Each structure stands twice: as C-alpha cells, then as structure tokens.
Length: 317
View 1 (cartoon, rainbow, N blue to C red):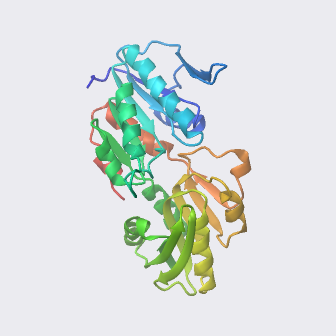
View 2: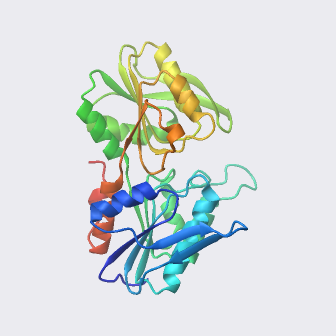
View 3: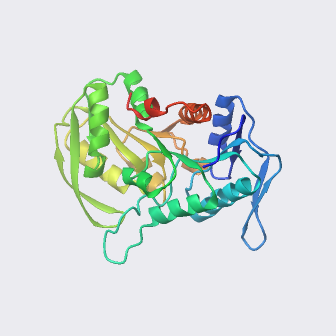
C-alpha cells in the first residue's frame, strides 16, 4: 500500500458532482481539476489537469445509473491517478452498484459484487470508503481496507427531531430486520415486520404483518428503494390495517422504472433519503426529502488522512 502524502485532493466523476462539491466544501477544499468525458465512440476519457504526485487522493463516484459508465469512470480515474504517482488513492463510493449480486442464488449465477471489487483493486485503489452496502459480506470481497459508513444514524436523527407520537418502525421485508431493530432501540419504540413472498424479481406480494400497527404512525426503513414495489405494497398493507401517517426512509434512492409514479400515488406521507445518488429534477417530487451525507463522508476522509480511527463513525449512535 502506498503512503498518504501531506495534502488531500478531492476528485469526482460525473455520477454525483453535487455530493462531491458538498464534501469538498465540508473539508474546505476545492474539487480537483479533472475533465471526465467520452470520445465519439463512447469510450471514457479522463484528464487530470493538476499534479497529484505524493498526494492523498479521493475519487468520489457512485456507481449508479448509468452503472457501467460510472463504474468505468471510477476505474479509469483511479488508474490515471496511480500512473501520476498519487501517494494514496481512496475510492469513495457512496452507492456501490452491483451490490445485490453478492451470492449465487441459483446455478450459474455470477457474483458480480466480487467482480467489481476485483476491478477496483486492479485499477490501483489503496482503500475504499462506502456507505450501507446491501450485503455486509461485500467488505470481505476486497483485499484492501474498506471503511463501511452507516447512513441509518443520519435518518434516525431526522425522525428523532420530528418527535412523532405513537411511532412504530417497520421492516418492509426480512432483509431489513437487523437495521430496523437498531432504529427501534435507538428511538425506544416498538417494531413490526412485513412478511412477504416474492414470486419473481422486482415483484413482491405482501402476506402478513407481524406486530401492532393499528392507529400507529409508521416509519418504513430500508437500505435502498429501487422500483418501490416492495415499499409501496408494504405501506398499502399497513394502511389497510388502520395505520395513521406512514413515513419511509432509505440511504440509496435508486428510484428506477415506475418508482416515482408508485411513490406519488402511494399512502406514504414522506420519503426521506440521503444524497448518495443524485436525483434528477423529474424525480424530485414533494413527498421526497433529501438529507446530505456529505458531513459524514467529510469526517471519514479527514480521519483517514490523519490516520485516526473511524470506528466511531460506523456505530449507530
């Protein structure tokens, strides 16, 4: 592993320049002078227009839609910094694409999350800084250090300040039970679980609700919202059982396909998300509130630069 230099340099691809600027502002630094575009045939072109020799460099890039373009931007930027003799290169990946392909669910399935980890290492990254991986074991796919931040505490603090009475936190599926239990303990409120069967990908059927939701205000929590089918089905089932106001939150607002239309028509009153994925104007509806993850990423970068422990940042405070 290379040794970090005596200055921080922040670079960003095109996936989430707004978040990169906020992180840089929190650090009191400018965004590095880099130009990332495409050649006429679609190949990614990267130009680093300032010296990075010996510097501690951070490339901020979510590998969200368009996933493959954003991933290649990240890999090529890391390669460019490595060949320019950067002292240490950290891939800051607020949203790690392909994370749901983390295991062989059936015969001949790829494990694409591991493949992406291999590509990031091969490109020359010395460490990875990310948030709310869909599966915690993805950290083990890397042979370089991975700092895994949690977005949940940011969202918990927001709802704690709202002081919603008779609040019950609900997991929309079994996969989020651990996350929801942590929130329930933090807010000292009861929890419930939506038990469902998924007949095929991106299609879910709510079967039962475990817990008391009648006449309660509800907070649905997940790590990401993709097509919103699971979330909206859970909200509708909870509403049908006599719940009052229904809120939802997630770290990663993927919002693909019919997600926005479903959320707009749903019984959910407010959806609170982090800015790990940049939302275009057509996805910024009144129901959606975005909270910035920039202060947390900036703290992690500063601690990494100073060779300080990051463990306090990983804890659900």
